[in-house]
Amino acid sequence: MKRYFVRPGEVYLKSNSPVDPSSVRCTKVGVALIGNKGSRIVLIALLVWSADVSRANADLLWFTSVVRQGQGMTVGEVMARGKVIVRFRTTKGAAVGSRAQIVAERLHQQALQGVSADDIRVARVGSPVQVTAGNNLLVAPDTETARLSGSSVANLAAEWAQRIAAAFTSPYLAVDGDGHLRVPVGESRAIRYGGQFGETITVESEAPEVAGVSVDEANKTFIVAGKGSGEAPVKVAAGSAGGQFEVICRPWAGQIKAFVQGEITGDNIPVQTKREAAVNAILSGMTVASGATARLAELTGSDRLWQGRVVLEGEGYFRKEQEVVVHHKRVAAPDTQPLGVLVSNKPEKVTGPGVLLRQRVPAGHSRRLLWHHVNLSDSHLTFALRLINNNEMPVRVHVRGDSAGPGRSEMYIGHVAMLRYWQTLQDSVGYVVAIPAGAVWNIYQQTTRPSQLVSGVAQLTNLGTVALLVEVTAEPTPADLPMSRLQASADTPLPLSDYEYEAHRQVSIAHSIGGSWDFVHIGKHREADQLPGDYGVMYNIDIEVHNPFDAPRRFEIRIIAAGGAVRGLFQIGGQLVDTKVLRPHQEKLLYQGRVPAQGTVKIPIKTIPQSGSNYPVTLVVGSRRQ
Image (cartoon, rainbow, N blue to C red; front, side, top):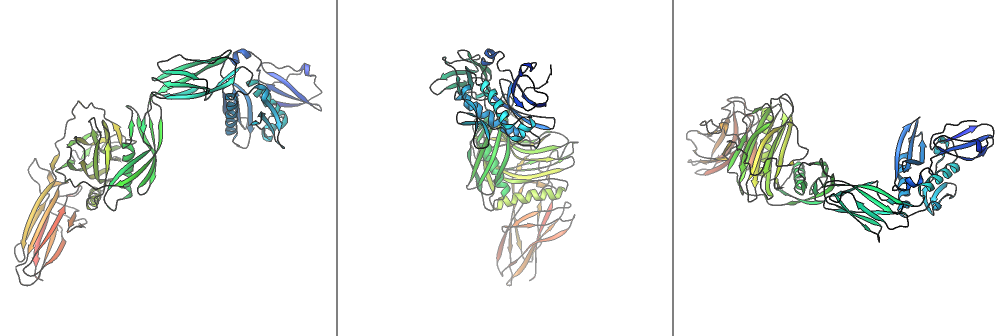
């Protein structure tokens, strides 16, 4: 007797002498003799549907698809009850996987509608040969699959029809999905069922504390309610048809609002500020479960309209993903002046992670904050300015300012940070962020390599009714998003730093044309408990020049680098003046003006000693004959 070793689902054409069908046998698989073609016999190895049919029908009917690689081919398979019923083949990289998925979904929908094995047939619609269920297309074999299977399109269609019909042997019960239903805790889901059965259907949860289940026979659905975290096997039966599916219950990793409103202030608002406002508005509109993380997958926009995609996930939670639209509204900037300046510079050179500054921003108050640090560790460090809301209510904060770096040019980075801060002051640029209760919020974060430094100047105005904490920290890795949850208990007070100083110094000078020079010292070293250099302190300098003569006279204001190399910014009469880099003891003209005869002029000057420069500097007010 001639033996042919044929794998399930394979088709072989053998050139041989005529074969008596009764002599054809196969081990472990069924064999169908489709027909003789001259001296060739077509043998198709079929899956054994008749073996233990009662056991197979005891399972729910699912249709799945898989993709396999091998023997120079890509194979897409449709399976039911663990057996292949349709197999596509290609050597050209065609999308056989997606074809198998489509066919599996068609078969699944037919099962839910209760199609019977008698409804499955091979039909010729025009030239293509199709397998249908009534008038509904299920699958159409292609010539490449038929060729690689060693068959014809017509024979392959007949084989597939036989296997599909066997899958729909009555009685059977089908349930929508893939056998694993995800139900969030506190919510419910409806899942469809269908099939060929004549008995009353029953359903039972084996873990009712995790998932409750009931039957809605009118709509042919099971109603599954999530009650607690865990897995709950659900048994379904209708006479001899039945089986089980699994319900997985978890809480969501958080909640995300689809539409949120950002609040921006000022004129000539940079795109980066609008982007920061959009990010913070998105974060303010969501809640993150304890232990879960938030990730902003993408963010696009340009002016007042932004769109982002947020992902919340964590161990023991269902992943939450949501598209979020942000619309910016322009609001008035608060006119609250900072009463104190917080300086984070001790230590300036940071060798590892830690909290570098922690202070309080009282309700209704404003604080200016300056930070300037160098990474002297042997690895990356992320420096962050963050707010901590350890209250039981959200708190709104107006933010202005910016950071600079990372880099290695200390004077340049300090200058850029101060320049950006001045620009936000002049145009009232900023945004409002609502910090949820119990949240830690990174306003700025900058990741540095060893020997790199960062600098920044910000102004934070607490618009709420309770105090906030502000920190500057060094962390080993950056946060995916600015927001996280407060780890310390609100009942445990966090220790505060000492680095808070007066935010302003008022200086007045009256100079008379023809008289002695007058001097203003900025950032002069003071007592031990004072801030050396007055870094971050705003000097409000009012200079009044009187001309006692009967003819106009000119005067000038010069700057001397008294403490070493320095670069400064001075707002003079509303205009921002950059001194550029001054060498130690170098003198440079800062401003000159004209006083009419017997007249007086007033020149308001503002300046803030900036990081990376060497203070003090001295302003010299003098006059010269016109």
